Image 1 (cartoon, rainbow, N blue to C red):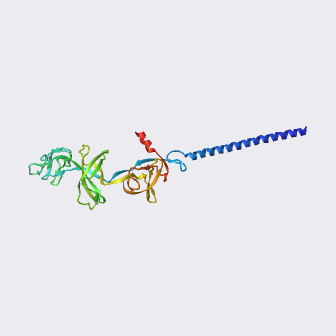
Image 2: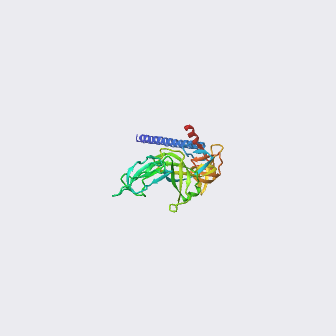
Image 3: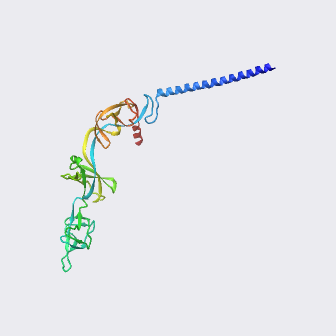
Length: 331
């Protein structure tokens, strides 16, 4: 009986070992199959090329999303920014002919006057003596743009009674730094903005240029006249002036963000005829104005140039031009 019991126990142990072996074998087999499946998927993706978002991809078949534009010849116009003041084209200060007390003021700020109109009367009388009132007369047509004197005030022949100006014809006086003096010409156009109307651009042109440079400020004064009369423009307003000077024509113009700098050499990526790959071209630069460069050589007019998405590109890279899709959506 004891022997039979021992045989039974050995059989149970053998059975457990067999089951354990089967489980281990099954786990190993499943692991091997899983690894093989992953390998197949990776090989398939590698052969097809990974397609992802902007600049995604691995290997020679990766595709980079870019924006492009057609290279065109255009004109770059240089400019100078400065400040100025709106003032009347014609103005004059009015003085009394004799000293005394202002006994009448016939005008106020903004009043229109004609040449010969009596602006005020000055009484030169003193204690113990009486004199006829002396009239102060307007020497020109215009409007009162300054009236510092009040009735009852004592004045002398050097006291400004009023200032008369032609508010219908305004101009801008501005100072130009000496380094830009050689670029100044009569007739050059300017864009004028005023603090009261920051979103409105008023056009003006140079009508006069000072013959001298101010030795203190190292600037030259220019006078600009507005192209059109506008009731919103008032004498005394502060003006921001953008004066256009030299023009540079006849070359392809490209945004400076499209350029790639490598060891002080500049390159552009040009889309090949297949529309799917790019070539890296070294270019020669010309004038740089307000974020745009002249391209003197390396790219011809009519070629398509990458202007955004250049960071991951190399010669021969595959691209997807998303600018065409964006233009379609906008339309």
